[in-house]
Amino acid sequence: MSHHKKIAKTNASRILDQQKINYELRQIPIHEEHMDASEIANMLHVPPEKLYKTLVAEGDKTGIVVACIPANKELDLKLLAKVSGNKKVEMLPMKDLEKVTGYIRGGCSPIGMKKYFPTFIADDAKNQEQLLISAGKRGLQLAIAPMDLVQVTSANLAGVYKDRV
Image (tube, rainbow, N blue to C red):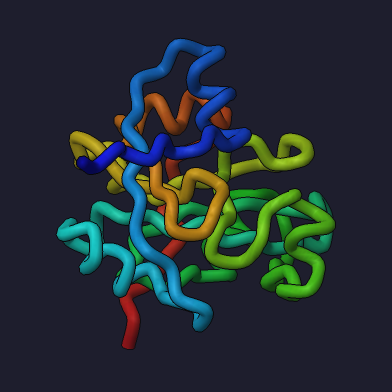
């Protein structure tokens, strides 16, 4: 007899519930070592361009900036600086991630961070029917319609990545 373990709610899923936005939670087993977004996409049987990773950077003028890009792409700091009104942007050091966002590496969601930060979602998200994004806990992903994600994070759609070389 198998009883289905209920997936615990996260901040992100509670916010979506409050705003009555549809989403699905997808869980995968997690290992100790960090898994990259492409591996997670494989485990969920979705193409990497449907799984978005959340990256946190710091701009010289605006401070913290959040970017969500497809798993198989690389953040372009110059483009992110341009769209976010900064001269330059650098990745936030990993050790500061939890302090700044309330989330840990591998479980960082653009929804429900400690406070609101300007968020930029790769503009080709709008071509997806649904995308997967971290639910704010390692091994837990949210499947959500791109425009709902844009709405709940008050994000801008922008070209902020480059292809991996």
